[in-house]
Length: 328
Image 1 (tube, helix red, strand yellow):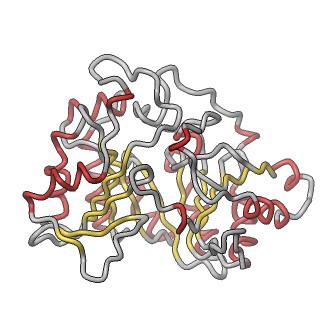
Image 2 (tube, helix red, strand yellow):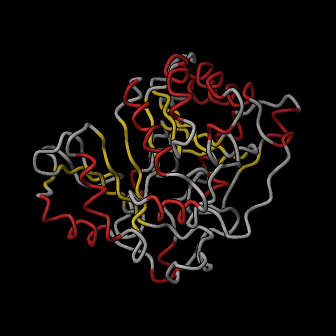
């Protein structure tokens, strides 16, 4: 079993399959964009599956595919099928912006994908286009419909809460959980190479952060109540609106971080293990893997250097990669 130096069992692997995306979200990518890595430096599906197979043998049970935008990678359902067929893996999920989900949902379900998280920060088409730098809201909404139709459930909607950007829509976003079994999760903005100005029409990034306590207060008029049996200590504190079919979740990496419960390890698209989302420590292994070396020692090293938690309160911010390149 994978147990780090603080006694946390590592059972969850997040796999970034690409550093490319069909959006350019203001909080995820700098205005000037990022330099794309050449194709030969990106892990092949067989290499990803080999890593997951070793991790599964050590107790990893859940795998989430991320990006960039994972669905822009050619023939992604083939990777889903490979991972879903690995002994010990109980859950294969996907985080997506939903743009290609309408087209790909049936094939993903047939391949063995369990469920999806869809990023959705606004319900206003013009604002959606500004946040994503060109995206169309209607396409993402159709993707959500397709995910529900083909059983990629429970559906989670990830909304990054931003003061002066979408704080006027918090109640509207929460209401998505009323009539359908959609789980809306509000996430605090994380300072991952997004502190430079976002462009015309956006506040100073230093003023945009909105805490979970502030979000909860804004939702109180809707009858927000904690779910029975919820510990409310993260990573997602679970609530429900009065009469709602879905849940409301709150993820607070800054105001009330849940590092002490972290059970995950991240795999970057270019073949490094990243033990903590919000620290730049990484363990590269792709060259060794392609040279025929076993991956196990690199997994063990990554677990050994996994920190107790991030150090954002000490102004130690990650600077090596933007969120697009990590996978969240």
